[in-house]
Amino acid sequence: MKRARQTGNTDILKGWKDIGVYLGCSEKTAYRWWKKRDLPILTLVSRSEKAPILASKRALDAWLKGGIEHVLISSSTLTVLDKQERLLWSHEFPHALREYRPEETEWRLRIVDLEKTGERGVLFAARFLSASTPDILFYFSAEGKIVWQLEAEPPLLKRDGRPFERAWTFKHVAVATNGKEQAIWAALGNDAGWAGCVLRIRANGTASVHLANAGFVEGVCPVTLPEGDFLLVCGENNDFDRAFAALLGAYDPSATSVSGERLVYRFANSPTGQPRMYILFPTTELIRARKRPYGHALHITEHRDGVIIEVETGEGGAHFRYHFAKNLEPRYVFPSGNHEFIHDDLEKSGAISHPWDECPELNEPLSLRIWEPSSGWYERPVPWRDNPWKEVLAPKR
Ligand SMILES: [Zn+2]
Image (cartoon, rainbow, N blue to C red):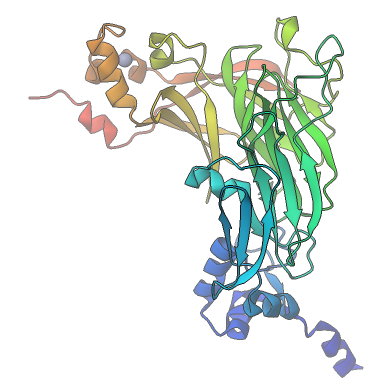
C-alpha cells in the first residue's frame, strides 16, 4: 500500500531544491527560470517564501523539451520559434499590425500555459495599423491554433443607453499566474472619449467587466495578499480630473469607480459593486504649470514588498513615483526621471517663479484623496522619501 501511495505522488516535486535537482541546475537557477522564463510551478498560493512550491515532472519535462521560446512580430505575422530558434509555427493576420515599443511588446505578448496542460501557448494583444480594425486578444495553442479570440468591445453603454464608439483599445494586459485559477486582467480605454474599464478574462476566453471607470485604465497588477487575490489598477478619472489608483478584490462583484458631480461621466449599465479602495492623486505643481488637468498614471509595477505607481508630471518621462504596500497603503513619493529638468525649463519660460532647489512643493507632504466603502472620502498625507536627492537641494556654497 505504501508503495502505491508513493507512485501516486511521483509526478510532484516539492521545493526549489528538488526542482533544481530534477532540472540539473541550482535552486537559484530554477527560481530565476520561474521568474524570467515561465518555468511551470504549480499551486503557488503566495509569493512569500513560506508558500509551498510544487512542480509537476511532466510539466517540467514539457518545458525542458522546448516548446515555444521566442515569438517575433513582423508587419502582419507572428513567428514562433523553439529554444534552438527553429520555426514551430507562424500566423498571418489579415491586417497589418502596428509597430510596438519594446516595453509594450512585453505585455502584449506572453508565452503562457493558460490551460495548465504543461504546454505553453501564446497570448497576444494585437493592435492593428488601421484604427478601424478593433484590438483583439488572441490565445494560440502550443501548436499555433487559435484557441480563442476576444475583441476589445466591453458591453458598457453611455449614460443615454447608446453604445460607445468602436474605439476600445487594450492599454495593458497581465496574467495572474498564482492564486486559485489563471486569470487574465486587461486595462482598456475608449480612444473616442472618456471611458475605461478592466476586464477579467478566464483561461477559456470568456470575459466580464470587473471595473467600469470614468476614465482610461492604464495599468493592472494582480497581487496576492494574506487575505486572498487582489488587483491593483491605475489610470485617470475624468469625473474628478485626477489620476487614480484602485484596489479590487479579484473575486469581488463587478464594480464602478466612485462617482463625482459630473453626470456626463456615467454608464447606463454601471456594475453595482464597489472598489475596496479608490485613490485620487494630487494635481501637482508641474502639471498645473503645464496647464494640464491631471498627470497620467501610466504604470503600476510590483516589487518585493510593495508596488510603485508612476504619475506623469511632465512630458518625456518626468514623474512622481508613489510607493505603496501591496494593499495600497501609501508609503512615500519621490520625483523621478526628468522632473527636475522640466522644472528648470518651466522656470526659464516663466511658468514657475522659483528654482528647483527652492521648490516649496517639496517642503510639505503631498495629499492623497482616498475613498473606502466604510469611511467615504478622506485626505491622507504621503511623505517625500528621504533620499540622496535631498542632499542635492542642500544650500549651495
Ligand atoms: Zn517648484
